[in-house]
Length: 272
Image (cartoon, rainbow, N blue to C red; front, side, top):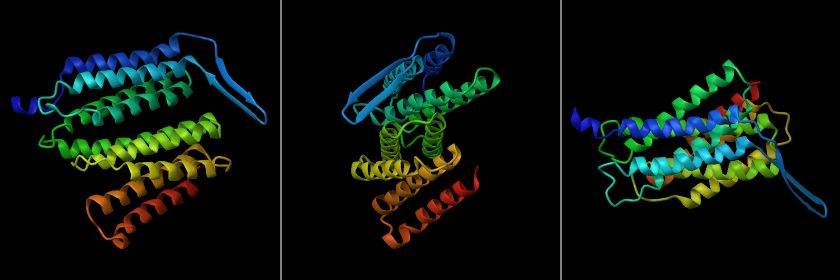
């Protein structure tokens, strides 16, 4: 029993980390502040981006998640002299992205439901990342599968929130590129090797950003848009894993991704 407990983080540390991040989210609903607009005017070009308290708090929450996960993972007995940077990427990205949907939800029961849902996602990501430090952990396979599913769900939620908020293209494209690239990079690194697939991650990020840019002016609902850009992320990540990790021939490797991509795009057509 004691051996199994060593695969889980210290409950007090997890509680402090979760409470700090959630408190940051909650402060955005309590503290009211004016909105500032960052603008840049050039001949034939005008750039304007509103800066709000929600933006600052989301960045602060992500910084807390990064430092908190570093503090949490360094206590793992199997980490040793290895770097823990791979276990900081997804928790930081998750914390940063969740601030967007929470800022869009109206006050009341709906916001509290989203707040609790975000708390469960954060707990799941933090615990799963801690468990995956040691591949010999009894729940490693479950934690790996959970992280993969949560990463795709996170990208889906982020794309939906961007579409719902009416983000302009110069904001949409770099966010999709960075999020898709980092998520695919982390998922591909979960194969148990120490290899980082930077070329694949960059290529997947570019494809998702290009698709998002192409669909930006289409009359799509948020769920349609999010499905349309999440499908390529899932399919291309699956293709990369099949070719580079499992050494599946290209003709066989493309079958599964094409089915996934077709299912996502067909679903996007019928969902309203």
